[in-house]
Length: 351
Image 1 (spheres, helix red, strand yellow):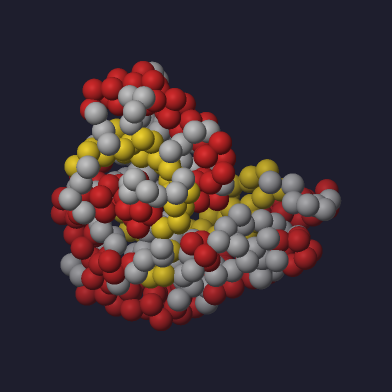
Image 2: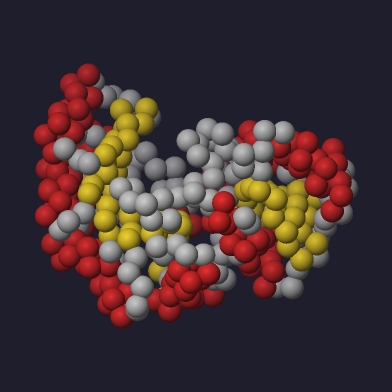
């Protein structure tokens, strides 16, 4: 089949060309490996993106067009759907990605011909079958069978990620999938795709590192796993594997604070991590325990900051205000936590 995939614009981001849409280029790789002709249209930084999408769809005569979207980007995906249908009314259009997985009915309601949930690179194979239902749930797959993301199908050198505090050109990667914890604010806590924890084999990761280092000159990595330290034995094995390779990466990734002990901190530092991040969320013990069910305390989170610093890493805290039942005192406890423990950076999101 002749299949076109579209990266929609994301003007709500500070820089839409900072990190790549990994899910979509993973899907592109799977389709190409299955023998389909695949092209990718990247609409980031396209002010007249609907006109471009409409003309592209009209000229190419695709069998299928696929779009990916997060929830903040869903409105743009719907605009692109309308443009593609104007340009090529008979071409089927599917959508996948985080929003489709979490809220498939909203995609059906907007007129997408297929909605792909869960593993995109398995679900897309079902979705292009003419007899498939409107909503397709791809089976969870073994990471050892995953293709490498098809970065060659996009203008990858145009992406501008730089590792914080450095001038190192960086790429975003995913080494593990899923989070088994059950924080109350997490929209994915009831979905197996987000709950089932899976890890990529070391040599599989190594093949991607070869491409990023030798083909594209990347020297930094944003490790976008939910938490890189869920499986400590796998992490220690990855440390040994990376130390056996000639490259020396600078890394930044997310940790689970209550699992961040001295052995894990030493391993991450040895792997090249220069910054670790965690969802501190609140400085209120009540909010953490009774409302979020975060499995941490302000003291555990504070110890994570101090431990990161002892092992030569900076620390970024992701925080939220506006939790259910939150009082002014709870919100001020978050302010006080930041002042006491002095993380190197923090975000504050309104829940």
